[in-house]
Image (cartoon, rainbow, N blue to C red; front, side, top):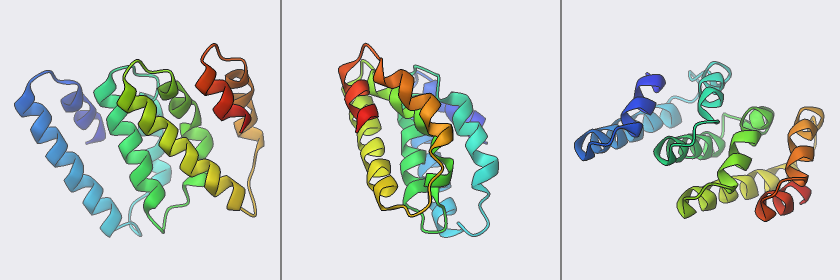
Amino acid sequence: MFDGLTKLFADVDVDVKNVANLLDRLLKDIVTEKSDTFHVDQFLPLLQKYTRRTNPYIRQLLVGWITVLDSVPDVNMIDYLPDVLDGLFNMLSDSNREIRQAGDSALSDFLREVRLSKVLEFGPMVSILVPQCNSKERLNRLTAIS
């Protein structure tokens, strides 16, 4: 279903986009209300599959889902941060200002959670953070070192 939703978000027709937004909100409502039956570990590979896409509408969809999942109490997105971290960093250098801001906001929220976390596996994130420290994009560098 998520694959189809990404196709709808990438469509140029305004009516299709409106329906896609409605479907997206409904799916998010279902996930947040039934979070105990939602399998994040099965869903994250789908999100990760699209993180390299440059379509701003798909990126908006992805960061929206990452943010919603992070807000669900039953979902510990810190455990899945290595799966979405690279994609969020890619959003920091997007030409669309809204995408950059959404990516930056999500990364800032994760940084707060990382600082509060008692147990965190940094190994998988290091291979993402180190190249970002050498990025040509200033925001990527600053975010990676903080």
